[in-house]
Image (cartoon, rainbow, N blue to C red; front, side, top):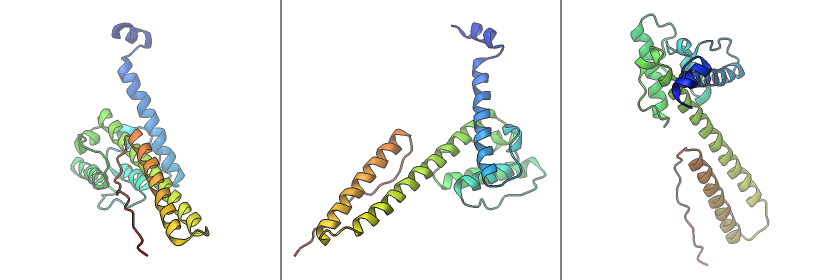
Amino acid sequence: MDLSSEMNRHGKNPVSHKLEDQKKIYTDWANHYLAKSGHKRLIKDLQQDIADGVLLAEIIQIIANEKVEDINGCPRSQSQMIENVDVCLSFLAARGVNVQGLSAEEIRNGNLKAILGLFFSLSRYKQQQHHQQQYYQSLVELQQRVTHTSQPEASQAKTQQDMQSSLAARYATQSNHSGIATSQKKPTRSVNIL
């Protein structure tokens, strides 16, 4: 089916229809976290509501679990709004979130593709945090299991290292499949000399 017949069938460009679907998905995603954290203000229009950077900073704070500093809570001019959005982008970049190609001006001006790109990066960051949290929880559980067994000390250390290596490999594989890069140290083996 060609583009013109697709446009006639839906009444509008299928690409813009897809962007509107993504806009709704990310609006719902952000509102989920805003509501979960007890915020009264929710997003009604993604393009307008984050334009001044204030609500965007609140969403980022919830996702990152860290305060975004230097946000002007009542920006009056377009330059103050752009500055707020720029602070948000810098905050995310400092935490390894891919904001390359995004500009504060585009987000302030409601560029839907730029906003969707930002929210895609935010959702990936949240996903990465979740995987890291699972990884560390697994390590804690592993440590507890290993320390409570009655193996000799040398054997216990080797078993612990093997299990940690296995976990690290498993989570590295999951991270690579989801497109999330994680830094890993190569496990070192210690040799006990008697």
